[in-house]
Amino acid sequence: MARSSVNSCRARLFDAHGDDRSLSCEDLAALRLQDHQLLWVDLEAPGKAELDTVCAALGIPRQAVAETAAAATTPCLRKFGDCFCVRVVAVSGNDGLALQGQVLTLLATQNTVVSVHDKPVPFVDSLRQREAAGSDIGGLSAESFVAALLDWHLTTYFDAVADFEMAVERLEVGILAELQRDLLPELRRLRKAASRLRRMLAPHRAVFSALSRPDFRPTETAAANAHFAALDTRYERAMDVVENARDLVVGSFELLSSQTALRTNAAMRLLSFIAVVVGTLAVVAGILGMNFDAPFFRTQAAGFWTAVAAMAAIAAGLIATARFRRWF
Image 1: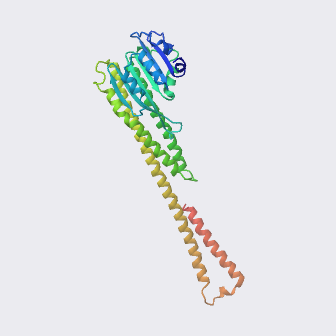
Image 2 (image 1 turned 90 degrees about the vertical axis):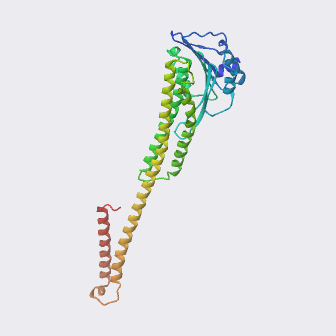
Image 3 (image 1 turned 90 degrees about the horizontal axis):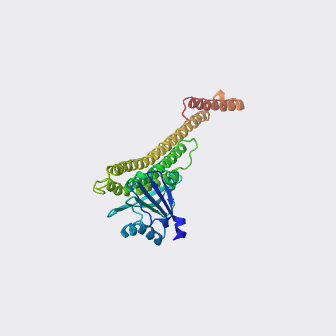
């Protein structure tokens, strides 16, 4: 176990009196927590033996361990006596489109929280770094600390939507550009990303609503219940911004359709104007080609060039008028 502990097991003891310290997982069995202390054990890609050993040392029921070890990706909430297990899916992606899910399982019992994940979770590392210099987290209950971790989990969706909105803005700038390229593939990617983001977040509704119900932990403190209620409200806000992401894609498609229609109208207007100019010149040429005797037709080369100049002047006048009226 020693080798895997170094790689995947990180334990942090938070003390409300300021005596925070890091622990090795071998010390967990002998640890006796006080009321002013909170233990957080983070396990990254643990083996089954390591997970069993750590959870046994912390007194976590076997049913909770089995639920954690299951290779499931659906968000869920389970209670096992004084211990509860919550599984959520965080979202990661560097451009708002390449979205990937990261399963995070949290086990909470008296003054102890265990987080288990197969891949690095950025907000977990950020929280550990932020609290490395000491904090007052030891004053929190295990339930309140779980609520804090779940709030960080929801932040990943807010961040993903922020990246998504930047991608939509870049798309709309491209739509309004003078030289428009083919933007339908990008629009399809955005639509798929918005749908995937909603599919990842929507199944969490049962988890967050259950956490905020009074029958979940009826003996819990009012502070922890307030944290879970605020968490449920934040989840609803996250759902709203994810739904808005889909509306943004629809708006971008309507903008693209409008710009395409405007460009088509401009092209048709130009073609119609060219037809008018050519038709006018054809009328002049037809009149000059009529078979009757007139002094003008006996001017030979001078008359020809005069007719050409007149037709050029007519065309120039029509073009100047169209440009003045901004027809193209």
